[in-house]
Image (tube, rainbow, N blue to C red):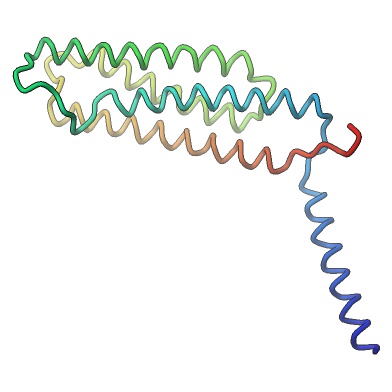
Amino acid sequence: MKAKLATLEDDFQRSQRQVQAEIDRSVFVTRAHFETEFEAMRQVLSCLSEVRLAINGLRPMFSVEPSNESDQEKVKRLFQRLETLSVAYNKLIAESEARAPFYTAELYEAVDECLRAASMEINSIRTAGNDTFKLGWFQEGEQNRNKFSEGYHKAVENIRDRISKLAVPPGR
C-alpha cells in the first residue's frame, strides 16, 4: 500500500512539474493582445509567402517555353515575372513595417533577412545585362533564393514558437 501511494505521489509530482514548466514558458496576454499579434504575424507570413512564390518562379532552372521564342520575348516574360516579385516585395515591406510593433524582434529580423535576399534578386535581374540566361546568372538566382528560404524558415519557426507560448487566461 505504501509503495502504491509513493508511486501515485511520484506520478502526481511529475505531472505537476510538467504543468508548471508549461506555465513558466507561457506568455500570458489578453485576448485583444493575442488577436492583434496573431493577425500581424498572419499578415506578414502571407506577404512572405507571396514573395516566396514569386522569387521561386523568377528564374527557374527548368521551364517549358515556346521553342521558337526569341531572346527579346524571353526577357519580356522575365520582366513580367520580375514585376510580380516587385509588387509582392513592396507589399511585404509595407505590411512588415506597419505591423512591426505587434510582433517579436526575432520575427522582424527574419523578415528583414528575406527582404535583403529579395532585394538582391530584384537588383540582380535588373542589372544582369548580357549575362541573362547564362549559367552564372541562374546560380546567382539560386543563391538569392536560398538566402530568402533561410529567412523564411526562420520566420515560420519564430511564428510557430511564439504562438505556442502565447496563452490567454480563462475569462480574459
